[in-house]
Length: 111
Image 1 (cartoon, rainbow, N blue to C red):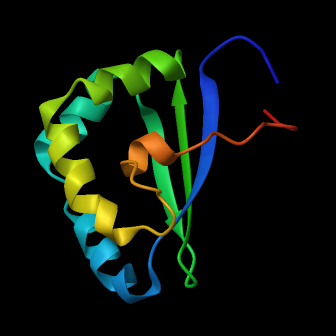
Image 2 (image 1 turned 45 degrees about the horizontal axis):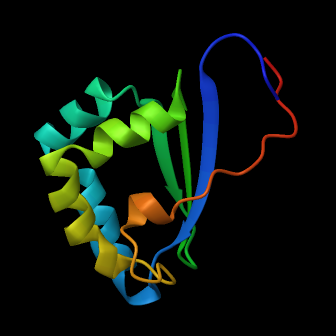
């Protein structure tokens, strides 16, 4: 759905069942420079939700998702973070987690 304001982006990934606790711990203490890079790249209202079976739902808002992704791809801290996070995920087919995410199509939004 198009409209004025930021684009809402939602994506799914799958965290390995044997890494759930550590994944939660890592996200309770995200590196300050990673947080700063996300903010500088235009990631706003960013949330991750994790189900007990490992289904991870990500949500963010940004004016330009392609530009936000490109800014993070150019960030050294993001490269280090993605390398550390990759072993936590299933079915990445060799891609970094942020490169493997595919936004879902928004079909409804209530303001």
